[in-house]
Image (tube, rainbow, N blue to C red):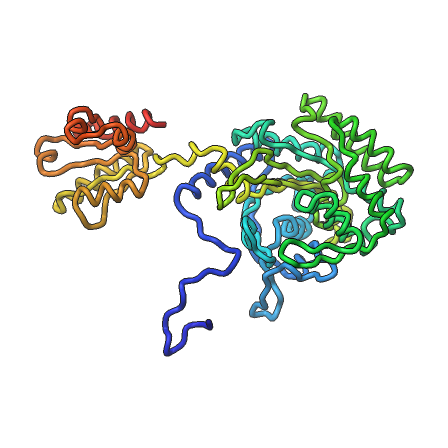
Length: 496
């Protein structure tokens, strides 16, 4: 259906595929989660940065995984200056543009964090959206493996701060230079200059979804997925694919054992040996801090699908299961990733500029936390509701709400229509923990009544008769008006 016209002035209330609306407790939980992550980034000395949602398409396209089709995946439009601009695909390319523009104004290493939406013009599916939020922390101007080790430390501390321990989160680390060495050993041109290299990266990156045989298909002739779509393969021979699969399966139970296995896989390839040396430096830092193999492991199957990574890469996965929309258990999968991208800034400036960082997928992490920590989505997230019985006393009701707000509590005055029953039904739907009730009798006596809605809901399932409710219910109390704030605080504290 097209846009509204003269004969049909109204538009349809519909939403583009792959987008969604969020509201209520979920947004409050997200705000708390972001504040917790920001606190960790602040502890590590990072500073906040904001970049625009739009960038020039050529600034974005050069850095997308689809290097053969640079604008693939971007939502783009022409502006009034007849220039193509696009919604940012990630937060890394805008950061690289910012660093290149600022030049000598930045103190290096430059450490920044940023949270914001990114957009990808890709096929949406269950849990896969075209707009989602990332929360990044990056270090620009340091080539030290300590900066890459710090990515692991940041993720580890952020997950701990969110209440996710070693039993819930696993962090895997690899190095793209090692894969470069393996590719060189099977006849690829140096680095990622071979056009097949990116297809190999994408194939390995799908390991957690398609399994080892699915990766083999993508490395050779191609693979048809469950929907019937066919993905062309890299066209490698069976022996070439076997060498790559051997690299992927070199992971062992400890970082030291994995390094030993990778030495055998890489052989004499200089770039691969350089990658192993960087992992050894990272391992020394982690071991020195007492971070065991169960918290951060070396995993050769992690390569990250983006073409701009040049060295160490990492992913964090939630290992506990959650339920999907149909109530079936499923794995959460990766909730964060990142790595070293030493070539991005230099594509703007022509000068070397090392860089590394980590990105948390906010939406996937929030969905997992909502199930793993259901108590965080508590009913008391709603405001205290001041009910209205006497319309001539609106100023008095507003004063009650104002006092509660000044005390740091959420409060609202009921502004709709209806009596007590309708107002309490509204309070339930708003997840209000307390209702403040005051009519003519209360105003005359200088009192207010407080209805503990959380306690009331709990007792409703225990008391069978109306008489028993009247005799035993302590969910509603009458107090002096001057004690309003103190008594509301006490009720909230009892349920916190």
